[in-house]
Length: 70
View 1 (cartoon, rainbow, N blue to C red):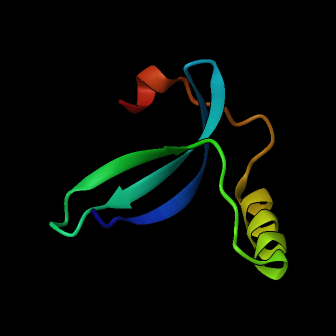
View 2: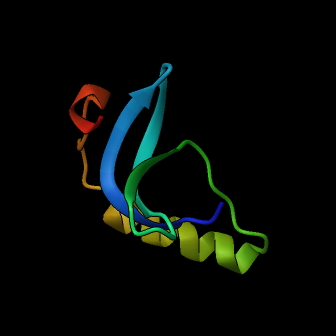
């Protein structure tokens, strides 16, 4: 399966673990939510860029209960 995902500024808790909510689009065009606990790039330069971009998008104190997302 292949998905195109876009990070959001939303954080929720899933099974007691804080996760970032991403919006996904399947090849069929259907939308979905993706809950990511950890993500890493394969090289150090990519890790720094990924960390920078995710921190920029995260609004302080932004927390969305999982029940509001599903």
